[in-house]
Image (cartoon, rainbow, N blue to C red; front, side, top):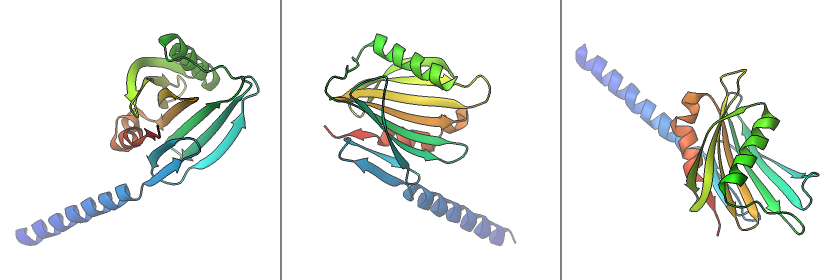
Amino acid sequence: MRISLNVFLGGALLCGVIASANAADAWKLVSDSNFGFSVLMPATPQLANFAKPDSPGVTEHRYVLDQNDVLYLVQVEEFGKGATMPTDNKANWDAAAQEYAKGSGMSVTSEKAVTLAGANGVEILFADPKSTDRVKADVVLSGMRQYWVFALGSDSFLAGPDAARFFKSFQIAH
């Protein structure tokens, strides 16, 4: 009986590993040569484009994947003619963090310098005081674009393998 149980448990474990590998392989490469980036997401995101009326010459492109309890988002801000390009310094990152916090109703819990896709940027963590929602945002400037890479979910999601895979996979075409 013990051998049968061990074979069953071993088979179940192997099936779990195969299912986990298949789930990991189901991630999709999302890339857009027009906006110069690629990233892995667990499904195909929706694309939305916005002109920013308060920022002449700036167009925002959002790739959003909402999976109910978690959200993945890549936001590309393009700075065209007449637009004021942000600078790569702490004052810019602080202002961007505060602007997002104000608009989202969240508060900034931490901010630190990071390298994202080979470029200097910032990692900003936000918390929603009314829920357990947290946001991790990595922001980087490259050329005439500012890239925001967001994940929203619980603390365990943001510290887990899916969020890590998402952030680590982000690349900028230089």
